[in-house]
Length: 266
Ligand code: KIV
Image (tube, rainbow, N blue to C red; front, side, top):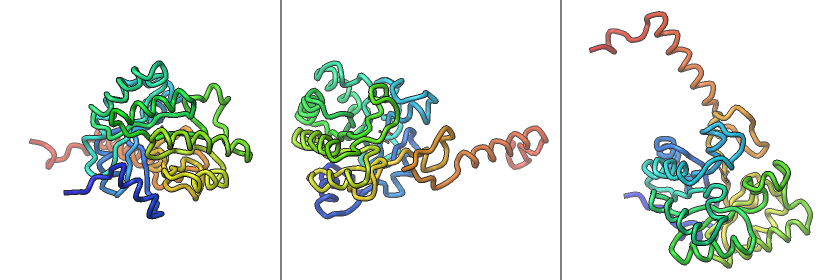
């Protein structure tokens, strides 16, 4: 029996100064491979709006889509903690609505949820979610659901003052009960400053080497999303090319009569 990663495992990683890994997944068997590779948290990111569904940004997906992806991923995972990224407007309308929508993800197999922001309202949502037993991952710095307010994909926390502001928000999230916080597109020095002042682990998404963990979008890691590659992402393979080559070979084989062969027929 594999030992499941829980909020306690994550807390212990920070206490023991041991780095951990987070990677997104959106379907059952990608999640299974990622889990078997030893990744500690599988995140069903709302990035799926872009990399799996082809939308321009993350704000187009809703609770119903995230439920389907959550069910698929949780069926593939045995060891990792499964976290669902709550989509735009699924936790902003009221605390009650947030509990209802986040609770649905738990019913679909998630072990927790991720929500963006550090306002008073978000703090009250976190308090309520944790009080009903839903672990929460926070998300500060560049928060993609605020894309239209932030005026594009911009680095956050560049000055000492801006880093202090993120730290203040992070401390409030920590007090409200989050088990970890994603810092997205924050300069490495600011992320280090923030990480050293928190008891909960920080997860870097383009926030450098001094966070307690790293997260990337799986399609960037596998080389499958062709639109762009963020500076902070590392491409470990070329799945786009592999899929193209397999599809091309299949197409050629069908058209030339090489597929199916004698072994492939009844
Ligand atoms: O949507 C997502 O995939 C994310 C992570 C990259 C942090 O929010």
